Length: 66
Image 1 (tube, rainbow, N blue to C red):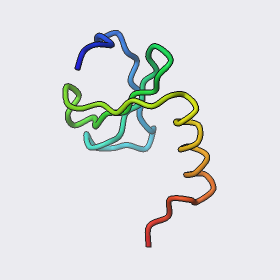
Image 2: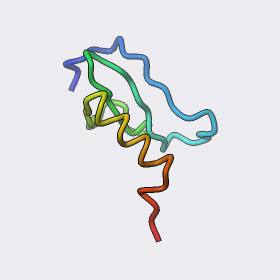
Image 3: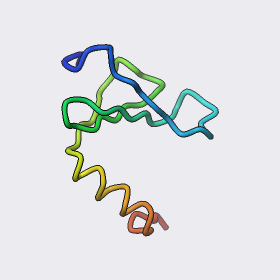
């Protein structure tokens, strides 16, 4: 899935100490997410608005798992 090429700047949380972290990149107006353990594997793509709503949901505790 290299439609966005290899020029993406992937970032991950500073406290990620393993290769099993989520990485995020911005490309062509989309936000891409991948598993750092499988950098050539599947990527999820979200609009900027979808991403902002997800981040807000995390911040407000909307996605708490019991």
